[in-house]
Structures are given as structure tokens and as C-alpha cells.
Image 1: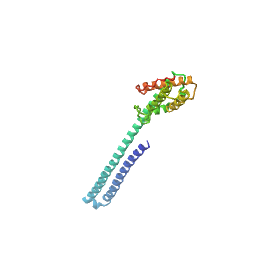
Image 2: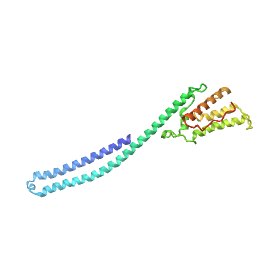
Image 3: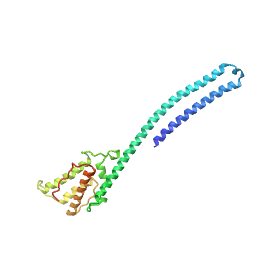
Image 4: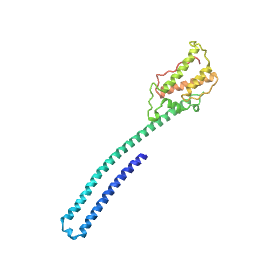
Length: 237
């Protein structure tokens, strides 16, 4: 807005300055010549006096035309800059509207999903953190989700932890399965997506984990259109 005001002010000052110059120049020239014509009776009978007057007036008009050309060039440059600033402002406003609209829609959708679960409260999730993970360039108006980004990498981290615990359960890994270790690792991973979980008894934690994975599955398939991504089946539950 300040840039637009500055451009308008420059154009107005240019026009006022040009008009003032023309007015003053013509006034002074006409005053000198008309004074000569009015006070010198001899001059009235001489064509040279009239020729001098019109020559002076013609010079002022030529100077004025030259200054008009310069002024129009300046105004043209300022008008182009004004159009560019206006365009950039419109683009910025459009990006902001896209960002805020998508963020609002995402938050309302996640909140709606939480109504179906009872082991985890909506207050225990930082929706903005989850949103920024899925849409890192949303503030620039980019709300498309690629197959490879921080969000999908985060989902793969969840699957990796599930796979690790599954291998402990079915004996493919030498270490024996410990739900506390699994819970600690999963809490750390889920925190990256804004989920705030505290250590809990085995059965209660499993219910929380089950509901969160179901919620993420719905977000992925229904909102983010990541239908190809599948969570690993959890053998330890």
C-alpha cells in the first residue's frame, strides 16, 4: 500500500509541476509581450511586435510539448511499476487466501475425525505442525502434496518402527519385544507430526496408537489423496 501511495504521489507531483511550468511560462511571456504591445504605440504599427509575441509563445509551446513528452515517459514508467505492484499485491493476497482457506479446512476435518475417537483428545495435537508437515509451501499458495516430501517420510518412519517391532515379535530380530521401548520410539516419531502422547499402560497405549493410525489413514486417503500409502499390520498388538 505504501508503494502504491508513493507512485500515485509521484505521478500527481509530476503533472502539477508540468502544469505549473506551462502556466507560469505562458503568463510571463504574454505579460512581457502584451505590455510591450499596450505601452508602445509605435509598436502597434509594426508587424515585428506581433511576430515577436507569437515567436515567444511558439517557443513556450515547443518547450511545453518537450516537457509533456518527458512527463508522459515518466508517467508511463510509474504506471508500469504501479501495474506490477498491483499485480504482485493481488498474487500475494491470493496465496494468503489459499493458505488460510486450506488450513481452516484441514483443521476442521481433523477435528471432525477426532469426534469418533475416545482415547485421544483433539487438544493433544498441534494441527498446525501436522499441516506444515504435509503442506510446507502452503504460505506460498502451494497446497499440492508430492509423493516424496517430509510428510510421506514421516509416515515411512512410523511404518519403519512398526516393522522393527514386528520383527521382534516374530523372532526375525534377536532383541525381544518390549512395549515400553516401542512406545518411547513411537511417541518420539509421532511428536514430529504434532501428536503429544505421554507414556501409558500397555493396553491403553495400544488403543491410542490404533486410533491415531486409523485417523492418519483417513487423512491420507480422504483429504491428502495418498491412497497408495498403507500402514504396516501391527503384529505386536
